[in-house]
Length: 266
View 1 (cartoon, helix red, strand yellow):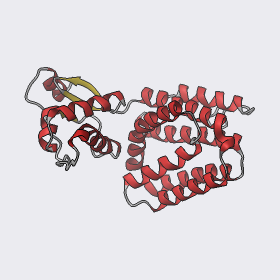
View 2 (cartoon, helix red, strand yellow; view 1 turned 180 degrees about the horizontal axis):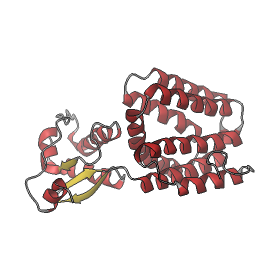
View 3 (tube, one colour; view 1 turned 120 degrees about the horizontal axis):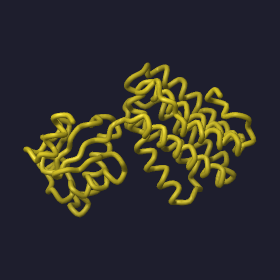
View 4 (cartoon, one colour; view 1 turned 90 degrees about the vertical axis):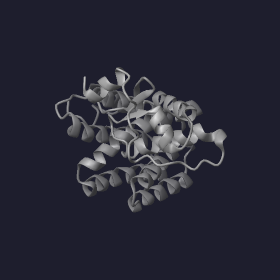
């Protein structure tokens, strides 16, 4: 157990607010919890608040210029989303990176996203391809991480726009957690190499929608998610075998009539 964790559990002085935290201007105080949640969530997803950072309700409230009540509610929501963990003595820490968690997370995302595509993709048309194409352009032109993530999510959301609300909500929650890992990837390897590779993969998805190749859309989405996960694993746990992602790909390829998974070697 590290000193920081021990301090949290023994009830010592609350951890100070991270220096990146700035006071919020909230016009409607009834929406304070949502405003604090959105602000902290963005800082976690864009990597400003790194894994392991301890957040204390009292220190955050003072730094943000709000009472503890909206901070407590915002932290509760972040814990439900998996972005914070281990709340003790009104403190919690930003969730860390774990190979097993990553494997399970991306496998779940592959299964749910491809299910949504399989059920609803035939409702997509040229207009959807145009929306996805414009999102891809915004990704290429993004000058900051938040703009890239927003455009990236818009592209993938369009491919499942006709899915049931509960499926889209599940994908949103999974996407939030995945964005933490993706941010790690973008900051730890050559960005130009990464962006070029992912641009080609996203262009394949746009083309599949435009040409009504919906089986290809399903398969390429699964492969795209799997490639992202394996690039991440190469950084954080190169010896780890992603058995859950392997199994998910095998299911998708079998469902599509493929032989093998077409990505991982047998």
